Image: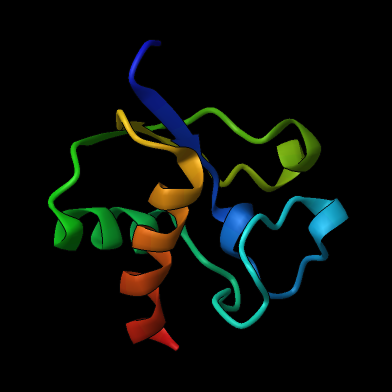
Length: 90
């Protein structure tokens, strides 16, 4: 998938350690993020995405789903954009 990034809710989960799958700083993470939280953040950011019922390999039993985002810039930049909109949920 050229020009796409995959986001999982565990990337933003404050209760996980970095080695458990969190990709954002703890100060930017939220507790128990859901796929709906990520979708709302992306809608507010005006980014195109597609929600899927596929799951993170390390957290397959949780069945959280994932989002495929149409994105041409770097993944860290996308993570920052999503975090900025997720902070309102804190």
